[in-house]
Amino acid sequence: MAELGRIAIVGLGLIGGSLAQALRRARPELHILGVDADAATRELARASGAVNDAVAVADAPWDGCDVVVLAVPAQALVEMLPTVAGRMRAGAVLTDVCGAKERVCAVGGAQSRVRFVGAHPMAGTEFRGFAAAQPGLFDGCTVAIAVPAESSAWQTVRSMWQLAGAARFVEVAPAVHDRAVAFASHLPYLAAAAVVESMLDHASDAAQLARDLAAGGFRDTTRLAGDGTVGGAAALNRFVTEEARGLAERLRGLADELDRDPGTALARLGRLADERRRMKLPPPTLVPSPARKL
Amino acid sequence: MAELGRIAIVGLGLIGGSLAQALRRARPELHILGVDADAATRELARASGAVNDAVAVADAPWDGCDVVVLAVPAQALVEMLPTVAGRMRAGAVLTDVCGAKERVCAVGGAQSRVRFVGAHPMAGTEFRGFAAAQPGLFDGCTVAIAVPAESSAWQTVRSMWQLAGAARFVEVAPAVHDRAVAFASHLPYLAAAAVVESMLDHASDAAQLARDLAAGGFRDTTRLAGDGTVGGAAALNRFVTEEARGLAERLRGLADELDRDPGTALARLGRLADERRRMKLPPPTLVPSPARKL
Image (tube, rainbow over all chains, first blue to last red; front, side, top):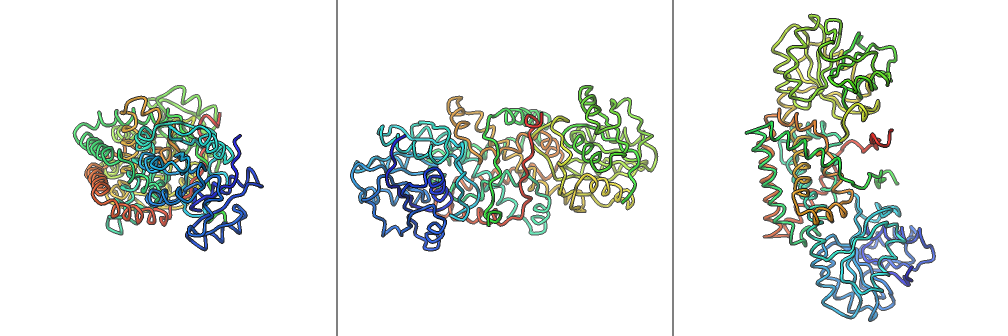
């Protein structure tokens, strides 16, 4: 397993905070620096013991880091990456966790001072912030790693995620990743958000009753809508808007078919139900909510 | 608690089978007759001990039942209801579990031989059949009961669901129920089905990668698509198709906004994420899959 050296994790939210906790759990002696703009978050992270220290972005000793992990929201990531790379030691490893890889890897590849490896751990919950972080978030998860990536830097990033609990690695070109993630994550996210907005936009009495009658189906279908960080990645994914229009067209077609020929629509829905049940998807894990943890 | 007498449950699938098991758990001495078209299902139900006996529809002693629960798919329910009512003892109680109440209650109200009470337990999983049934499926769930309903029949149905584990009852006019359930269940279902279809319709290599990269977000967003029985209820709900077209329009608008003005789109998605997290929804329960049970 490649040596990790001194790691800095920038952004101590759900993903960055969980990564710090997971690495601490696996290797207590690892030197982990937390970097976050929020003083209360830094204090929480320090108190947890997951990081050796936590500092503001302006105070980060970039040139003393062997590996820097950018775990900030997508837009901030694209803006911050060149500055951080420019202050790091030449040849050090810079990586990220963003759910859209094409834009991020283009920015990472536009410099040659540090070795950039785009990565995307397929894990998350609808909760936010360091308070929601947990060391087991990545246990058994898949990490997509954007290719081409320089070989030893690639090994370093892979080792880090293995330590954090990841079980599978998929090497993929950034554009191919983004197109697949549009279907795997960004369309489900936009559909979930649209369903939530549909319910909220209705007269308050109907909406209240709908909430009273919402069972596990609504809860699960819309869970992803609570994960605001997916939106930033979706906005950076050039395949998303066209495919979202395609999804809208498909939904309208289903509605028309239910009106015109319900038997055919039900047969179509039945086939989809069968296909969905046959999909080999990761099993659900009962992730404790922040409220239950405290 | 009202006396239940001899109960027949018609359709020993996930809902009917779970109801039999839940009633058996609560009151071992209760006389429960299972009615199902499938011989293997009848055998499974008999062997489980959840029913005293199981018979085919043609062999059911309808006139010996005090309560008959129709737990068959929506379209079959509408077709079967008048026949069953006509063969039951005058004044006995007939009820159902369908997720669309307006059409079903109209059919139930078109006869006066038996006392019909439309009910809808807000529970389910994506698994099907008696093999997936479980006595705890309704623990803590909400049951919608369509009004107006004759008072003592209403009490009987309520008592039955309390025995089965239900914790809350919402009395609601059928049309009001259907409009609320369109948002709580049927739109989420159609959105989930459309997302599954989007993924399946793509080139197999991209689809395979999308499945490899599908994490909990995709799993949860599309879980409801695996529940084929929701489709039948959605097809009977007159509010669904118009609202599904509205949802499609909303999704297209989100896509256009992401293209035109991503900052505004992200602010909108962020507000929806906040609202979603604030919703008081039932907590997730780890429902064992049939594979894990066997």
